[in-house]
Length: 165
Image 1 (cartoon, one colour):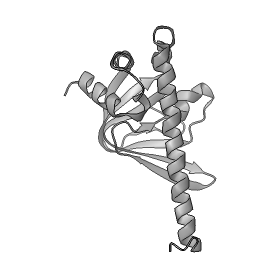
Image 2: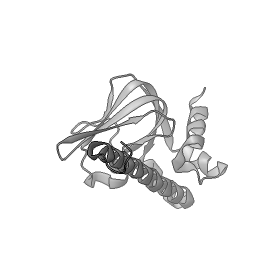
Image 3: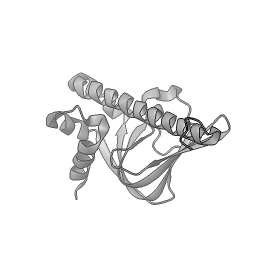
Image 4: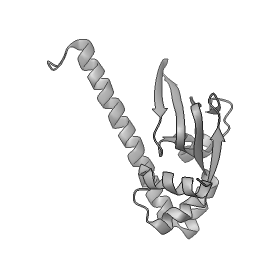
C-alpha cells in the first residue's frame, strides 16, 4: 500500500476526521507525512522529542503513552488506526511542557501532522482546521470519560460499593 493510500485509509477511520468530506480529507492528507518506526523507539519524551510539534496518528502497529501524574504512572496503549498521541504539544505550542513519553512497542507506521503545516490550512481550508480541532476535543473527551469510568469501577471494586463486587 502506498503512503497516500495509507494516509487516506487511516484518516477515514480516525474519529478526528469524521466530519470531513472527501475533498477536505484530501486537503488534510497533503499536510501529513508518514514515518516508520521500529519497536523501542521513543517518539516523545521529556527533554528529547523526535516529533515535538506534531500530532501523531497511529496508522499501524502499537505504541504506548506513559505519563507521571502526582507521582503515579498512567499508561495508555495506542493500538487502533486513528489513535492519537502528542495532543498537548500539538495544541499547546511552545508553552506546553512535555511530561509524557510515547514509545513504539511494535514496528509502526505513524502519520505526522506538523502544527505549522496544519496551521497553514487556516487561510485556504479553515473548515478543515475547525473540524479537526473539534475532533481532537471529542477524542480527548472520550479518553477522559473512559478513564473516569475505569477509576469508578476500580473504586467500586476496592470499596465493595454498589453491590457489584
